[in-house]
Length: 635
Image (tube, rainbow, N blue to C red; front, top):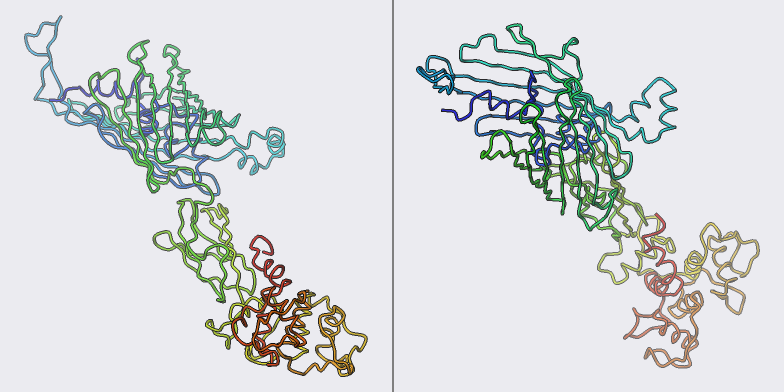
């Protein structure tokens, strides 16, 4: 036998005031989060359950969300709610269903011989068991005032927006509610009914830490169709209710009264006023939500409700919310004054609601690392999308598909020198949510210079700087000899930007015509005191240079001071003409490659050895290479 009759369950469940006709199931289908806060939500309204409490809150949602709640109330009443929101460029659209039902309630009759002054009722087995359902389907639309004003054809609305800038933060929303009710059993016929109503809500933020919200529920008058119509012809109205709410951010990292670590505390207060029923007092709802960490919220509240004619009951509520991988699980406990001793537990599951993430958390780039140095002409960009709000990616200006597991992988080509790989995270509307930049330095390589070659790194850096160039066939020929003209050009390009080297107008050496390809480099190097000719007035540009001669030129280029020769190399005598230069270069760290072996000063200098000496010189090491490796500039 059912412990509670159908009529009592309905009265307690919906908290009807005396004389109310048609019950609105949205009064209980507000979700476990809202129930845990005493149903104080009109001012806060920041997720998908705003559909039931204040549809204007849907305008502030920028990702699709789904939520559901189901179970039993008072051990008797089955309920289920489903709702969803989908943002579009034309406003946010929402749909929801709330249904409640009970079955198997036994009809009763007055027991025979029962005292009329103290009646006793018994089950009437001759009658069919009673059943009842009350469903509502909602279609919602919400948008920001700013978008509506900008879309308006009237200039005065745009002027209003410019004059009152706070209007852009106002949100508006509406619900179309379609009801379906059925009552059967105990001889009831034509117990089916249908009807519809309208809600209209608003939400504003007059100051950073305070939100204001209002919802005009069931605003459609009876005469315009705002009613429940039974098949029998009986009609009932849905009394209008004006819900006004405040939500204050007491603690929080931003836009709050105070800051206390990562703690967030919200206080909410709602008031319900029924203008068409002056005998019904104003009902208040008080709630609080404390979020000590992003994964956990703790809630409490007081939910006032009618307990009879002119009587108000204070129902205590409490709840908790847990966030995990895009899901939020909410639990709420709610007292009902009319059902003492019966525990009432509510559970809801929401998908698409996330703790607020920082921009750096939306996309995680796994490779390459920022400030990567590579010799490869392309790099594999791999990563993972960490935020559900990211709908697509754009890398180096090209749209990239997000793979299964929210990962992405794409090859990005690299130019010689400094590169910036730009990774943009976009939402459904194509709005850029985050831009990550990965900086990569690509060094030049040559087919005939293997990675195992002793001068591979030095050739890569000097070649990337453009100081020395390869041959037309793409090779570098590291073991090839270097001429005096080639070394002069190398030093001139190191000292001065190529475009700044003047065209020669005066012949400095008898064997160097102005038409020679290296004339401008040799003349500039000579004027800078880096190179010198022979006593006979010649330069011998095509002559292969020796190690000693090359070192002398590079040492002068690097302004290396001559030193006291201490027999750094066993094959170089103290009285050798280049001994002081060799001593100074050795002390300056320019001869690391030659240390511990004969220097062989008269041996022809190779291209790789010239690069090595130049790589170790002060102008290159302390200026050009530092600029090349400075990842903060030049991108």
